[in-house]
Length: 287
Image 1 (cartoon, rainbow, N blue to C red):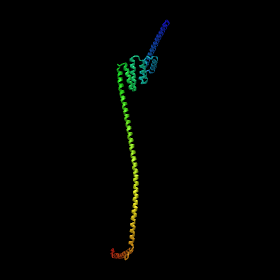
Image 2 (image 1 turned 90 degrees about the horizontal axis):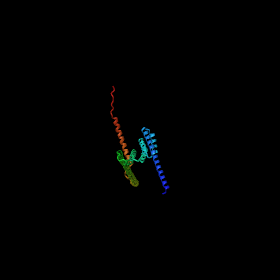
Image 3 (image 1 turned 30 degrees about the vertical axis):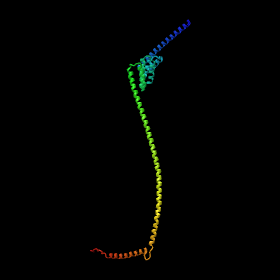
Image 4 (image 1 turned 135 degrees about the vertical axis):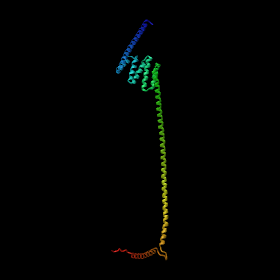
């Protein structure tokens, strides 16, 4: 290596060192400015001037990425205003920017608090665990972790119970559908049986009609048979009404009876006339 090369390397080393020093100074300057803005924001927040505080915190974060206090404090401000999504983002930013375990512990602890507010207990458990990895002695974080685990278990049990209830309802609906299908099948069988009985009934009615027709036919034959003897008997009566030799006819007998009745009536009228004439009349005494 010649002298020129050695000189060039020395120059580059000096320049690099100088640039690094400048960069470090710039970072220190930016961090100092960011810290001052953070103090201004803290002051505005203590005076309940949230808008001014939010502006200064944002300026402080933009000035230096090494200032973990600015996003952490802004996250706390959002948390107090119940703007949990914004709070979580700032706490996460603070945890990534923190170089000390103490600052990381605080950032993850508050991230766990945000998850608790959201009722996202599984993520809260993980956040509190990460906080305890950075500070295992913090009893508040340990208590929050135990509470998050308990709420998570309760939430899981409730979800399991809800799922069991849904499964039971589903099974019940399926059983009811099966029962209804069986009932419908039974009704269809009954209708089919009734239809068969109806057909049989129709056939029975037809058989009855045939029997009635046969009976009527037999009745007509019997009536014809009865009429024949009656006609025969009529012939006998006519034969009986005709007078036999040495015997009075029916008309002659009636004439004789009528003459006898007239004679008896005349005799009775005479007797009645005598009774009336012989009756005594009571005379009233004339004063």
